[in-house]
Image (cartoon, rainbow, N blue to C red; front, side, top):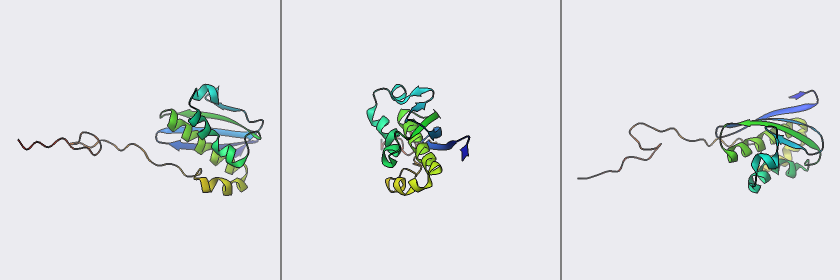
Length: 132
């Protein structure tokens, strides 16, 4: 939905949730009030993952992004931001959907940790069997 010239979208991965506001700008990206480099430190693979939707659509210098993200770990948060940016880009310019869809950037990765069951050591791992 567009509000005040900005586009909003939510992205999720595992237990991480990202809220992204996208607006026309100069390619500036802030996540939780920090720059992308500050937020992800030396994790270049994660930085690339966050920028991927912008690189695919060639919008790196055309839009500015402000994101709030919570829950999960660094990798899950990076994926949540990636998902939210992709959704916001489609809301911002619907013709970008055709570019993002083949890369699977609009699909929410639904894999989450399975809960532990009683009588088991983990979610599926049974206690070791002892014959004697």
